[in-house]
Length: 207
Figure (cartoon, helix red, strand yellow):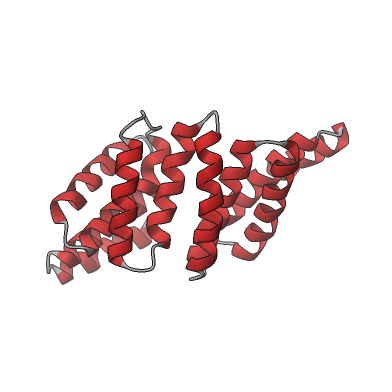
């Protein structure tokens, strides 16, 4: 669909449409695990949205690029991208959708558990001032649950998981269901329940 949209945009001479199509294509490749192709198209999307003055698209492209960088264990690069994404997200007309996504990836990109909790505290303060989009919050909630569990803040982890479970129930299966199982597994590890943790990680892998 994204490739079809790109052809239509190019035929119509719509630079903004092309920028959006590049972003959609990069996101689809990222979610499919095709990281090399995803990074190529997301970089093009970030540059194209910059040229067209599309703040939201530029922020989202960089947040997705940061996700790819985290997946490749390039956390320094991820944090550089997220710094720019955060600045753009705060200026966006859809800040309630973007900011929570950026903070979720910032938690994942933290170099150690202590820094992850510091980022989580900053995020909680800022996000408490707005009504964030629930579906867009899933990455944040599962990242927050994982960070809390690893830092020994088990009640906080349980609270984040409960909220993630509620929102994940909007879909039948899919990646967010798997992410919730993974967060549950991390919590069980922190609770010393190794066998239950392994079972939950297997559930996550099977989704």
